[in-house]
Image 1 (cartoon, one colour):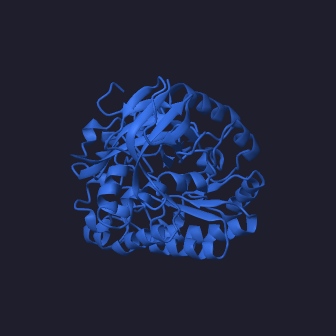
Image 2 (cartoon, rainbow, N blue to C red):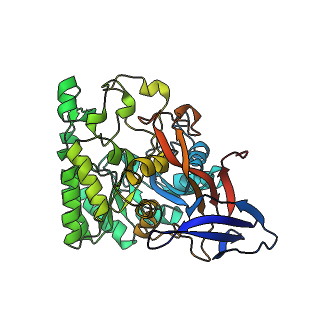
Image 3 (spheres, rainbow, N blue to C red):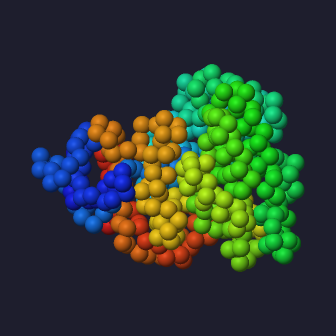
Length: 428
């Protein structure tokens, strides 16, 4: 079906909003202009709505295979579409792990069969995410891997990470790292700070993240590899990435919405495991450093780290419950309301961090409204205001610390390759 999206507003390079129509033909953006005539297309009235490139999230967990009680490719990508995301990258901490050609082939096929948005699958760095035996990088790339990561665990030995970077660099592929030195975790559940000390909950020190980043940026320099830091969370980590970039090392980084909006001061109940994520909510100074790092370009883009869990798992005590919260359906309204409207950044900056920036970081063919590009388009009602209701999430996961928060800026429709995949008020 071909579409004419009428009377919406797009962001210009100077940040101003301009009324615009977009013609979609054969899944591609065919024309962008003012007062375009209908040539027989299906028409979508977008008056009062912001038109952006489809949002891009390069760090989510779809749980399939092996964790279908928590999420599936179908439910997770439907949640993505509702949140305005048209391209997502799925992490490999599944069961089995995509660490060989056969399993990656199955995953690629499953994505084609059931996904509602574009999904880029990560492959593991090591077999079974065990940090010991490296996977066949060339074979996994040819099988469809987007990049390589052992997300959920850090690669513990420098030699193994260095060898992985060398192999990835030869293929012009990125190593994407969950940065955590296991010897410095000390069984922690929350950030090691005033709140953990006051409540007696074991704390995770900031150094367990930053020391891995410091090690890895030097390895990346030696290997001439693109090294990407997942969900950066501490002021020391920001400083290390900033210094590495100044030194010309090919390092990039992402930050998650919850680390921009919350710190451990916001945890009111140590037993509320919807505040338990990895990395944990750090201190106020860390949060301020993350904002500064995002604004000055040290941190390249925003990614949700959408991590669904069952209610039963999250009902366990804080030292036993799994880490992680969901984020696909709330990312844009939360950031628009509590980041843009609070004056931390402009709307143009936020949209770029969720579209062009992740796409450019990994040289993807998305995150743009350019002619001839795939018609991945998100329509957003910046004036719509409502409370977050986790019970209404399309994701199987309801685990969020933001339940009940009032937000503006809700996605109204999501087009993927020229097809409506989600629209407010329609049968999705």
